[in-house]
Length: 326
Image (cartoon, rainbow, N blue to C red):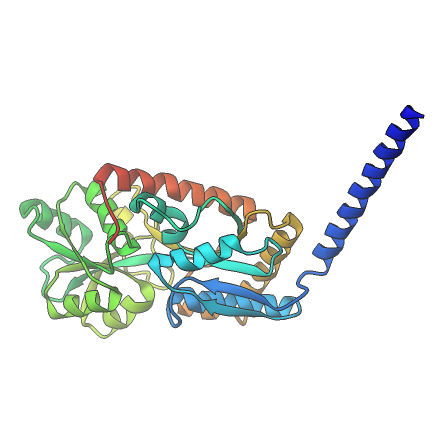
């Protein structure tokens, strides 16, 4: 009688496990079962918001019901990131992650409102380089000439950034280290004020993203010395890569979709496939190019490796140079 009870319990547990597995599979097949949301941890109107809306459109077209964008700005992306970390891991709440939220904040700040490791990498939305800009009156016309001037005047040149810890701060810090120069950092509260002072000649240099830099370059208000990608951009073939002078230099910004940890792999893979297909269409591809961003198809596993490599690179630089966020 005792042996029969044990066997009956064993078969009962096996039946329960099979039932739960079937339920989970059905839930994944039914995804999405309600309106989904993509949380953008920054204000509306910026590059992060724009890419979030491209992703929402891709998921809305490829799945039903629709996905909407919700802006949750604050604390350098921490508020929105914390909200998504706490969300149900069912594929209905996603985050547009940035270098700040999932690479550098953990090294720049003593405390975070969330754990960057409690997310599932889903799909890379974009990678984009920065342009090294100078005032029109700055004597250098190349990266090599800039380095020569900087070595003649250690600490005398200055560069603007959108804030301590931003990509526009870290990219020039990596440049300073690899080129062996001393250029003074002048942080601003946002790229707008930084660009204003560059145009006014209060600062000589700035590393800025393509979206905001190109109009100023094309109007002749600033000059461009180089691009932070490993190679020249096809859209700017006459602008040399900084790496042509400073070997091995590369600094890229990126945006990626992340899901709460525990989101089922089949759902993660489906989101990845939908966004990847949409971003490579003849309709969307030129829109991304117009924004100055590059879409590179990556599996969730490849994205995870990319993020870990970025953490190794920038975390080491931040610790070595003792950098802190505002």
